[in-house]
Length: 124
Image (cartoon, rainbow, N blue to C red; front, side, top):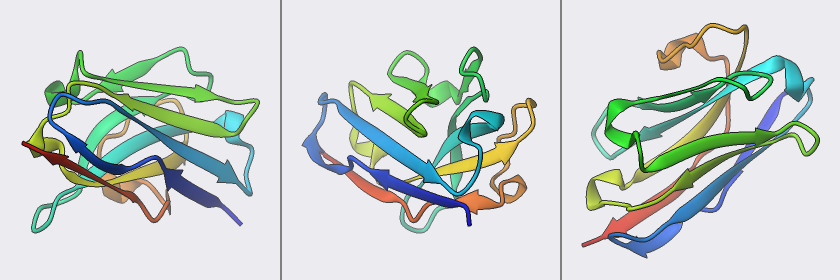
């Protein structure tokens, strides 16, 4: 049974940093690409970042380039999202998702495996 558990969210001030973690179980983690999405109240879930199964390729949404870094540790079955220079508009529930295949996919409906999310709130 695929399970993804996010952690690391919280309430921070603008300009602060946070590192989110996504711990996976129930599948061969090293064969799945991982992605982070976020969803603010009243808005659709949007793509944030993607990392290949091996970790050698990453892709970011334009609005996080230079501020967020996605990474993974396949030995620990964990993916990370390091967030820096946080802004109030980054406030959202952040979700990790897993998908087999090497192609970068930014459409949420193409992912069948999701965590429950972790809340990130950035105050001004």
